[in-house]
Image (cartoon, rainbow, N blue to C red; front, side, top):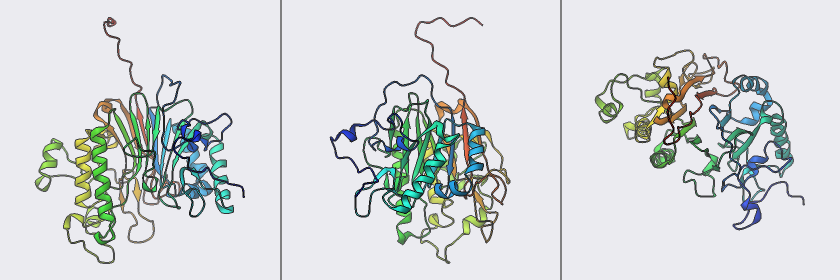
Length: 393
């Protein structure tokens, strides 16, 4: 029987030694994702680096390609990002039932999966996406998953799929892709949802994730750009040093400008259930416990929220990246849970950070419940060589 998927290579095999993201001549647009999960240095590093980025939780990339792709393509053509980070791809990894899976490849060993893969191939073969290479990190089923599109003129030094950046394994459910460039790291994550109930282990999963993220940001060896659906809303303090406010959170004045209806989200319950710890009560993404941990990650990692760095006021029409269903009790209920976070060293290079969806009718969401968010940095200025005289002004 013909094998339609690339098997997971064994240690020491020639296929394992292929460079991550280094497509062979004539490879299609998804072939860059066929690289091994171990990553690797890429020879011939160019001098320029990406500085325009776009992130989007597509809520099933396949569905978006079938219905909303022309409109999203127009947005990409207009913004012309160097890198596109996608979350909630919801395409299964290659590998037949009961066989090892390859999270870097799309499944195509059944008639249905081959048809679905062809939809993806066609979408990515047309402009503007044909100018990008694609890296995948996929779940075993149609759940979670991430993708990273990088313009072909940019060669990352290494692409990893695990927070430890050394393991050849992918994070569970394909939640992480890390591209290393000469002067910074780009981290794309689909953070797990906190959930509603302790006994379902959702709280524990989120606490474990936050602990690992804290360790990651504390030990990165380059400036960081972290983007994606982080599934948590910011605690925003105004006109007070963050370290003081964070330490004295219970007694500090803070503003809930990243949600549309703070009281609604604070008191939200699922089927009347109330967690035993009040810190875990409320809408997932808005509970005091996870928001406190998120604030600590930003503080300890010396990270700046690029959107809030430029936009200090609450924007009730266009200041939220996630919106509830237009029908039902969540109509008009919105949160900002999709971010670009950058290391303080990059703060002065932030040119723009914008959300591209508006209103409770989800204009600019392209069929998803999340809207795209863009970031543009100014191009880095080369440092002067030691001893080189400064030009006169």
